[in-house]
Amino acid sequence: DADVTQTPRNRITKTGKRIMLECSQTKGHDRMYWYRQDPGLGLRLIYYSFDVKDINKGEISDGYSVSRQAQAKFSLSLESAIPNQTALYFCATSEHGTGDQPQHFGDGTRLSIL
Amino acid sequence: DQQVKQNSPSLSVQEGRISILNCDYTNSMFDYFLWYKKYPAEGPTFLISISSIKDKNEDGRFTVFLNKSAKHLSLHIVPSQPGDSAVYFCAATSPGGTYKYIFGTGTRLKVLA
Image 1 (cartoon, rainbow over the protein chains, first blue to last red):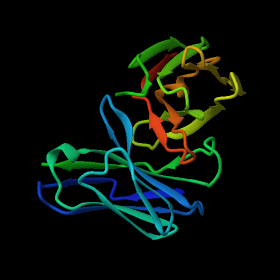
Image 2: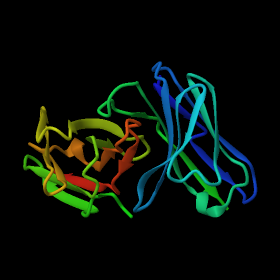
Image 3: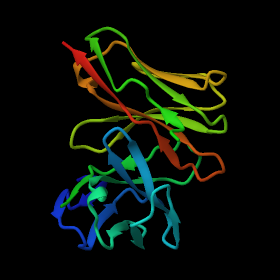
Image 4: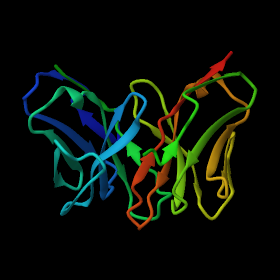
């Protein structure tokens, strides 16, 4: 079983719909992250959480919200989806420590907004 | 403004030869640099890292070199294998203790058999 699981893997929806992407992990890590990947832009950080009571905005948080329901669960919501939120979304986890603690990624959710 | 840049979108190398992937950055305060490999339909996986106080780190066929004066790092893969064909991202951790990643745009490596 994957250590970092994202659901759904693929989603097609319409403009204006509310969407929730879910992430769960079995690694026991405190830190969790949401990224989006767009062609030619690499991965950009949307939100991150260092523990259940800690939520922080990343570089592109507008139009998104998150919820850290438990240490193992971190969900990303698009309250009213728009076409330029079409992208590949990744969840990641890491341990506390220094910056060389690697992040562990899920396999992504491909989201298309029509 | 792109703080971490990978200026080569793609690279092709013959099997057995050396692959050199490059990454440039603008912020001299970055603490750590990491390389990730990504296969299609999978998430990125960690490959190797280097602290800003070092200039080289080696792990098997993979070596990362850091040139702080030039704000440049490179990943060397020797020898290259067909299974190394993937997209490679470099990332830098932002200063200040939060260790957030700033990713480059990726380089697609193709190793030809």
